[in-house]
Length: 244
Image 1: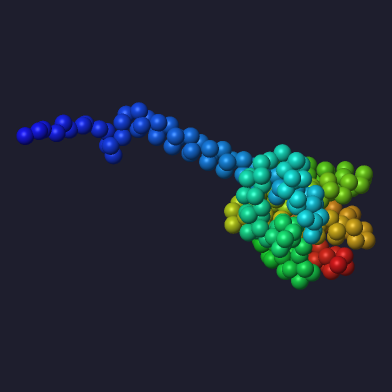
Image 2 (image 1 turned 45 degrees about the vertical axis):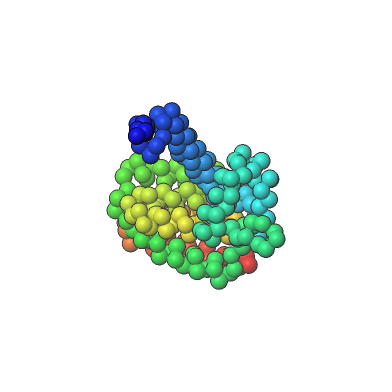
C-alpha cells in the first residue's frame, strides 16, 4: 500500500516565507492607515481653522483642486475633512455643485448664540474660580493683541483674538464638556463674527466687553464674570440681527 507523505506546513497551510510576507504586508497596511488618518486630521484642522477665521465666505463653494492647493493636502484627506465638517454643520453638500460653506439662517445664528451664552456664561463663572496668575496673564496678553489689531484695524486679527479669548476662558474653567460645546458652537457662529464687527462701533464695544470679562475673572468674581460674558453674547446677538 502506498504511503502518503505528510507535509508539515505552518498554521493555515502557509509557508514561513508566506507568513512573513503576510506580516509585513499587514504592517504596511496598518502604517498606511495611520498615515492617512494623521494626514486627514491635519487637513480637518487646517480647513476648520480657515472656516473659523473667515477665510472662506458663507455660501462659498469649496472647489477641491483649489482647496488642495491652498492647504497643501491630499484629495483623500480633504474628503475626510469635508465629511467631518459636514457632520459638524460647517459645510454642506449641494446637488451637482460639490461642497460649500454652510450659510446659517438668522434663526440658526441666534439660536447658536443663545446656547453659547448659557454654556460660556457658565464657563466664565468657573474660570473666575480657577484662574491662576498665569491664566490672567494669558488673557490680558490676548486682550492686548485684540487692541493692537483694532488700532490698525485688522478685522481678521480682531476676530482671531476674540475667538482665542473665548477659548481661553473655557479652558481655564476646567469644564471639558463646556469647552467642547463652546468649540463646536463657536465654529458654527464664526461666519457671523466678522459681519457683526462691522456694525456701528461694534469693534470697540466688543473690546470693552472682553475687558470686562477678563477683569471679572482676574478679580475672581464669578457673578460678574458670568454676567459680563452673557451681556457680551447678548450684544453679539443684537448685532447679528442688525447685520442681516
